[in-house]
Structure formats: structure tokens, C-alpha cells
Image 1 (cartoon, one colour):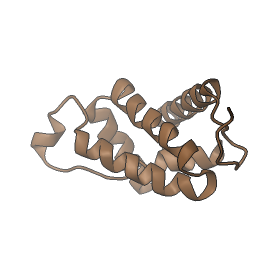
Image 2: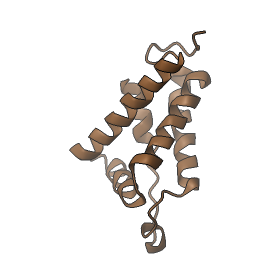
Image 3: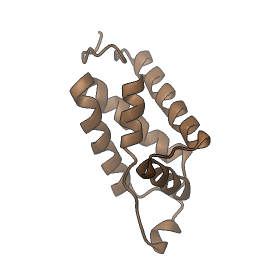
Length: 119
């Protein structure tokens, strides 16, 4: 689970700039796509594509559901500084736990280092 938390945290390191972007309420799809790519890059070496694809999809989907763009930018800024508030730590932990649970329900092994799906 700790490796996933690192992958989830690393997936939102991109900071967007500009007042036009900051006024949006939804996280732009291109930033979420970058988060997915970062998540996969950090996750795949330890868990493999079969585990990481649904895990990273879930993480990005949960960012869309749980964060507006302003909160997403705040989280990104904190992560880039290496300073995570208790509130944002709780958000990441909640998303990580939710996504790990969803994968386990679907039959994907999580946390064992085994990158295979159970059938």
C-alpha cells in the first residue's frame, strides 16, 4: 500500500499555472492524463501493467470525483514542496484505500508485488 501511496502522490506533481486555469472548476483532462501516465510509470515496475492500469484509472477517476480544480492545484503545490497537509494526506489515503479495495473486489491482487490477476 505504501508504494501505491507514493505512486498516487507522484501522479499529481504537475502544477498548472495561469489565472484562467485556476478559475476552472473541473480538472482538465490533459492534466488527468498526465497523472495517469505518472502513476503507471511509478507503479508498473513493482506491480505490472495488469495491476497498475485499473489502479491508476481508479486514482484518476477519484481525483475527478473528489477534487475540484482549486483543491487539485493545492494538492499539487503541496506535493511539489514535499509538504502534505493532514487534509490532503487524508484525501490521498482515502483514494488509495478505496482503489485498492476496488481492485481486490475485482480480483486484481494488490500489495503482494505479484503483478498477475487472479481468475
